[in-house]
Length: 160
Image (cartoon, rainbow, N blue to C red; front, side, top):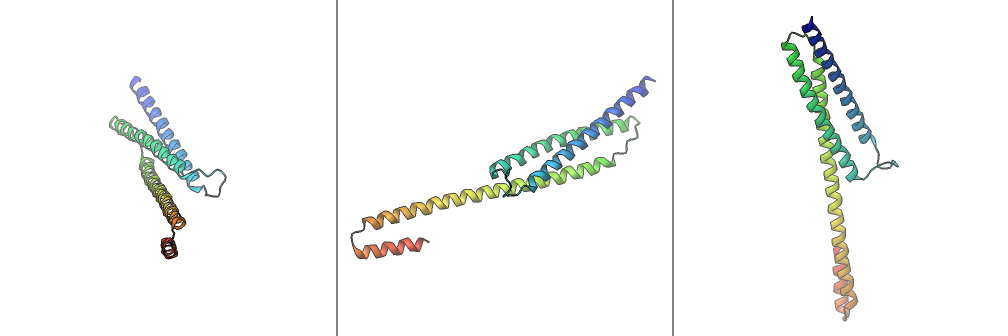
């Protein structure tokens, strides 16, 4: 009788953990969808840096869920070896969902990193153009010969 109660406790614990991992998976999927559905013209739309951080946090949470799922799979195998009959088909579905979500989050992180790099590149280009315009403007002001002014105007307009 003691063995049966012990097995029953193990099975109940397994079922609780299984439900918990499934709930966590659903929560993180909902959060991912919420972040993805935000539009740039929304009032609560975060900066790209903030969005990147949000997706990195999602990835961190997903890693924790994956670890819990691996532990759940280990427990399921252990229970099966002890004679429990556990149909864990939902486990393979959950595993597939976790892998798909992992890929989607990684894709979103890569996309945001490219956006931030492009923004950074444009910022540096803008500063470089401003610098060239400032130099050209100063040269134009200090130019003493009419011919020099014509050349400087040509240089200034050729930059654009």
